[in-house]
Image (cartoon, rainbow, N blue to C red; front, top):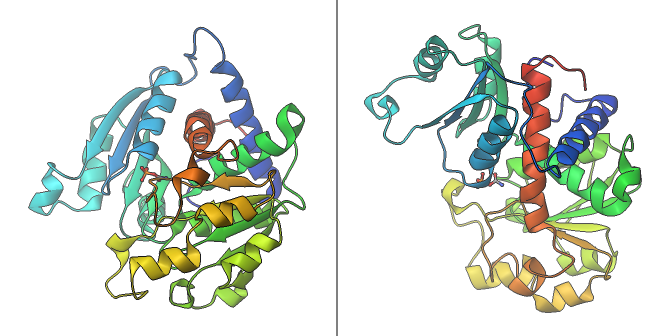
Length: 314
Ligand code: CP
């Protein structure tokens, strides 16, 4: 696998293969010495044009655990502010030896442009592009689901028959899109619920069930509820009347959390707006996988870097 750009382009065997490699990587992280020599001599550049905590630091940890050299680049404070283009920035990074570029960008499709333009020969891993995709987030979410539902017996398995309710700002969410494509490919049943104004045009063609009533979705007793962050930074208009109204209709508050079966997992990609889209009672409960998702991000991103940079087969 040369690049990892989207989950839409992954078939089930490849996706399960990535999750299995992530399982292997997770096992190495239980050892006293966590570092592997796999990417010794390779250089990974984290090229982030948008803010990030989890994705940036877990890619950095993943690359270091594989013994790669890591250069972290934030557009803020760089020559991007002087008007330098993505092409020139990437070519500058390749000139100093980048073998892999982990790219987060506000423009949907920027990683694919970089991978297919011929500007650089480095492997490109999409760390989130606009409202398009966030493939490693979806892979770590699927990895977390598989581990919680099947434990060690999950290896080699897909998510056939698992029901996942994804709630909130679907319109602006690259996490939702990557999860929809990946979960559907892995055999899960996905239901999307949000305010009518935050459901994208064309959603009827997605491999999901769509609704606007969160309480009805909760009453179905899904295996997992994935709450999405409301992405105010991508909203040029008022998509809902008030924060209070949004929370009343589509927030996982204490009462809704208590209405869920005890086996239902509560997921959130972070960062969370506590008290708005998710109550602390839900986020901090034993049913919550929020911190596990972050921890599993390191193993999943180790798998992504190994498969793209060491030429491994998923
Ligand atoms: N989930 C996620 O992408 O978080 P960051 O924006 O902090 O990387």
